[in-house]
Image 1 (cartoon, rainbow, N blue to C red):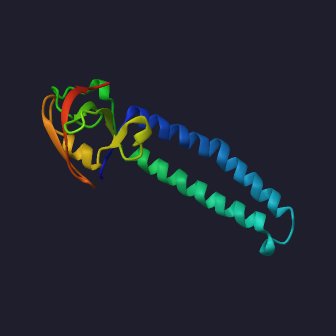
Image 2: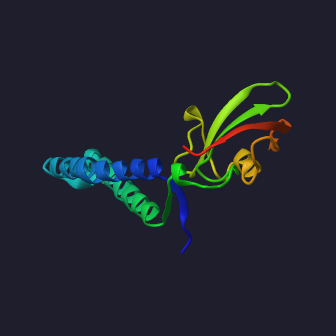
Length: 158
């Protein structure tokens, strides 16, 4: 059974979503189905069809989240002792060699990735180029516009 890496924060987010789906979304859709049934003929009832479709989506998402949580390998970045190497959960400060622009990313699981929050997926090209490197190394990333080089300024486990 393959375990999927997930940070503690990512696991908490999935657990919260699962709780919401089971305690709020599922009862609401059951109520909507009951309401639509009370309107009579189900063969021509668009409300009923929409509610059943929504129920299918919710049940599918519940199953998906439960599967992800049951196959998760939860990693707390603060407890990592990687001796300065970039690993899953690391927060990395990079400086693009060409422009001098500095960026900071945390390497997280695929479900947690959010570029707006500077969280990149462990399977992204930049994360794959960074894994195993240390502060002071240069990482070459294959980007759509060609190869970009980044100086690794800092590696943190927070």
